[in-house]
Structure formats: structure tokens, C-alpha cells
Image (cartoon, rainbow, N blue to C red; front, side, top):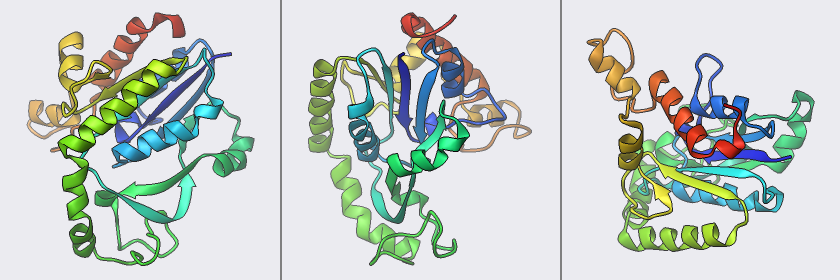
Length: 242
């Protein structure tokens, strides 16, 4: 039986309160099995790492969706790894098994919260334990420049092109940015053109004069979640019940 794999950052997040695009896809996926890995502020490399660590379990009939963020993000090491699975078709009693198999060892530097208690998900590995946001920013500043360089961009393009050509399963890669122009990565501009719009929570805030939505929150609105899910279902009808 085929399985749906979705790996990304907060744009891959799910919610019990709204119909987010990963939830819609999981509910309509023919294979019934699904795995969604999502964490806010996750960087480009960590998303690829999680994908590569799961390759041994991905079969030829599976469908994999990678969501790529801006290249400028920098990751820092967590002191304690956390489970990277946010939503899956496994039974709840298998939660401990999930925790033992699926790990997230890093967090995006700009997601760091030093005021949280020691032992929390935000605690960093020594010698970064307890570091201030200002000092952490100074330490990773060079990495921001390196990660967003043309050299990094071309390197990732070649890696992803090689993977897509070699791997036997359907792999769809998209980004909510326009940083990488490659035939294997569908960008924000391309999605906007194909769907007809790009709509965010910030757009709702502007349209309602601040009554609804949130200023500077550029994640998908509920309208965009549905439209994007419909776009993927139409694009890959072999995997979904219409």
C-alpha cells in the first residue's frame, strides 16, 4: 500500500482547527498511510536530511512532497532531539516507536527562545546552552551568508536533480520562496500563476483592516490551503480520491 510523505517547515504544519493542505491530502490519499514532518523555522538542509534518513522506508509506489524554505536559514543543535513526526496514520499506541525512529536534531536559529526552562525543546547543546539571542546571532551571521550564496544554491540544485532522476518514486518539490530557479522545484511565482492567486493570513489582516488575520504572518490562509490542496490533487490524481 502506498504512503504519502510530506516533509518541510511550518508551511507543512497541520491544525485540528482548520483544513490545512497536508490534512486535506492525507484525508484523500488513496493509500491511507501518511507521514507529515513539520517544524517552524526548519532550515533547508534539515528538511533534506530528514528526507534522506527516511529513504530506506520509502517505496516505489509512494508519493513524497518536500517543502523548501529560504536558503538563508541557519540551524543550531538541540541538546535533546525531538520527534519530527507531527501527523501520521500510525495508532497512538505506537507513539514511543515513532519517537525512537524519527528524530529532529536541529532548530532554526531564529526560532531559539533562551527564556524557556532548561530541559525544554529549545535548549541547545553545549557550549551554546543558555546563549543569548544577540550572541547566537553573531555566531551564525557568517552561516547566513554562506547558506544563501550562489554556491550553496547550485550545490542543492545538483543534489536534488540527481535524487529526482535516480529515485523510483514520485517526488514533488516546492518552495514558498523564489530563490531557486530549477525545473525540479516549483516556486511561489509558479504556484501563484498556476492557481491564480497566493493568499496569506497577512492578506486577511489587510483586507479586513486588522479585524481578522495577523499582521506579517505570511503563512497560507484557509482559502490558500484549500486551493493548494486542490492543485496537488489535480496534478497528481493517481494518488488521491477526488
